[in-house]
Amino acid sequence: MAAAVTIKLALLLILSITTPHQVLAAQQQHTINVQSLLSSEMCSSEPAAPDSDNPSSRTPGAGSTHQIVRRACVQTGDHKTTLSDHYAVVLRRDHHRVRSIYRRLAGPQSTMTTIPARLGLPFHSLEYVVTIGIGTPPQNFTVLFDTGSDLTWVKCTPCAAGSCNAQEEPLFDPKNSTTYADIPCDAPECRIGGFQETSCGVNGSCAYTAPPATGVVFGCSDNITTPFQNTGVAGLLGLGRGNSSILSQTWRTGDGDGVFSYCLPPRASSTGYLTFGAAPQPSNLTFTPLKTAADPLPSSVYVVNLSSISVNGAAVPVPAAAISAATVIDSGTVITHMPAAAYYPLRDEFRRHMGNYTMLPEGSAGRLDTCYDVTGHDVLTVPPVAFEFGGGARIDVDASGILYVAGASGAAVACLAFVPTDSVDLMVIGNMQQRTYNVVFDVAGGRVGFAPNGC
Image (cartoon, rainbow, N blue to C red; front, side, top):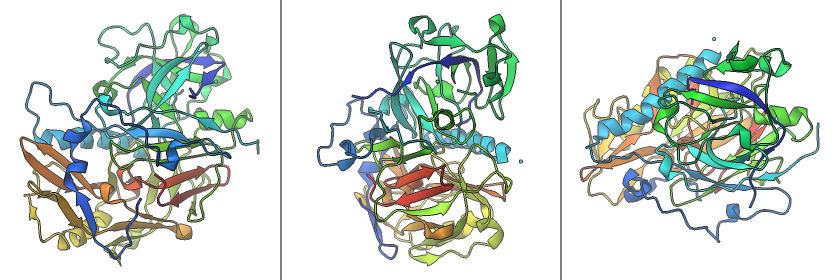
């Protein structure tokens, strides 16, 4: 998610990571429990109990796997929140994020690290969070983890009232870390921000104005504007391909091997994982090549070739120009954004299989134009949706990632979780469509892999 932030770049000698399925066949119909997808369920403040039967909650012998949780909650407070408001919040944040990605488009030994995670429901979003420790001794913070940003940053003191939104945890206090140091303006680290604008800040320290900012070297933010104003997270863990990401910094120093993977859980009551390092590969893992900067392509985001889209097992007739659009695999965008020439054939084929449900007038949920009144339905039957990539890699979208279901005032509405964009050469596959998959980012090997039944 792109956010306008002003930060002071800092060098942290120790950035500690605090340690402590189902996929249906393409020809089958999905049966969805509506209640399990409603936002009202996700607004509970109770943490999810550990799943002793879930192998992703245990640390394997050969690699380290960390729990991750999805945060998805729209608070109504004392005022009435309409369904249109609910959808608008998600789409507004996605819109800014995809615009940011579009602007960016114009050998070491493996070191495993385990991150414990906690349920992210208090943060009012549909993205994913982990908890990291920064400083010596560590100060713990819950942050988004984002494959579309290079930044790792947290909000720091001092942060004047009105400059930083409220968060669940205290701000990072540099004075309480024995390994914190400001980066001077003339240091090489002040020039690794990629697309960020740099300036010389207070007391001659390196400052960045983003989106996104740069973040071991990490970002210390004292000024936040939308869309982070609406969340209670402490910051962001940048997993992009740019020079200033944690992945790149640890790879350069020999502390990492240029590989990480995750599985995004399908609902608030389940957990997934984030793994740094080359974990053992499941037999059903298939890879697609990453596009490289020589093509030329952006240096930060993960771009692959999409070869086809199918609905209910049948290929959707998408024009070659739309299929050949740069396809970004992104953990921070919620729903999939695609060229109109690809979206409308997918939408029309999906609608054709949804004749048993009452479709709402277009405009009922903003840009989500394929919505159904599912009030009173305990389950829904929907056609499967699948993406196939170059090299044969494939995502059969989990049932939880096909429809975005929301409830308000006793009603329940389910909308197709895809939207058209004005861009003809960019597609962003959001986190909803990646749910339950083991997604492996092998930057060193120049590839991205997908395996079903990851969590």
